[in-house]
Figure 1 (tube, rainbow over the protein chains, first blue to last red):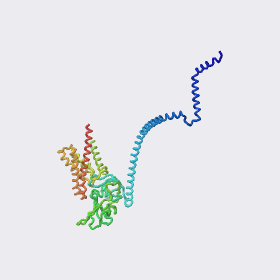
Figure 2 (cartoon, one colour):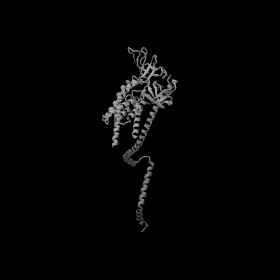
Figure 3 (cartoon, each protein chain N blue to C red):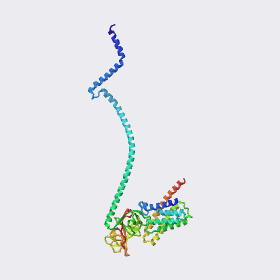
Figure 4 (cartoon, rainbow over the protein chains, first blue to last red):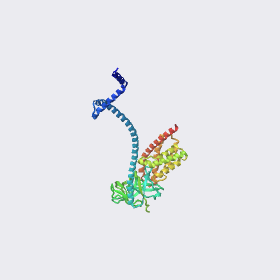
Length: 284
Length: 162
């Protein structure tokens, strides 16, 4: 037998023996060829790519939407946990800031009040002691207040007590570190006063309930509603010219030698917080 | 001893409330007089031999923070207490309603007792114009304060019994 007679059976046998390798190599070669052929037009999608992209686009969209939704839920949850904590912190901050705001407002108001008191103190040319109101009378028919200055600060009974608005009253009972002040509106209070415009004189007496009256003013004296009443300096307790209030009502009867005059105090005694005690002794 | 400390604390708390806290939030004449309530309570429910002394001291304390006349409230509180002691045996003193009524009457009695004393012995002749209109509102506020206090003490008592 010639050698060629055995060539084809031997080759077939060889192919059978290495068919796996050959097929694999062929496939790889085809893939490589496919790849190399597409290189020159790599910027454009070919038919296969378009089909695949078109078919998978809705799926991609759906999956992406679900994914976004899940991610959103998760992030929202995580954010909520943070937000709750943050909310708590912010609420605390708001509380603290509100407190500071109130403190600032109070300090501002106190500053304004004290500035007025200081201006008054400088204008009076009398030694004075600032005091805070720490208590009020327990009974509605007496009008007294308690202040936080006493004998240790140089206070004595009879000293006048004023604010920037006008006369408050006078010191009546002095302890070491506190004193009581008889307000202008108490029934037992009397201050020598006069009408600023006409210089008509009288005695300002308390009537309780936040009111005063100007008594012993002669009938023929010129007194009108709205006139300002000031201290006359008579009696030596209050310096002359301090505001006491204004005339609220004038009544002249047919008989009698005096007028009936109501005075509205210049100082709102229900809102007193700081006062000035004039450290002058009663002139004997 | 503990009872004495408790009662002293109660008196001081009532006094401080009356002269510092109430004036800041309540307008005249709607400020309760807690010491009158204490006097009524002592007169009706506490038949202690020291009651008179305690009531007198209560009045003196009140006078230290009210008005100009030391001894005015001490006297009127003592009179109120003695009257209440005299009639307490004939009354059902455990009744809350009676207690409220007695506080109202004690407030009126205390004010009306002060009026002649002030008119006769003070330099405040027009005081009746301030005192009389304030009596009814104060009596009503005192009644309200008493009912609130009794509600609290009653609740406290129930809890203790459990």
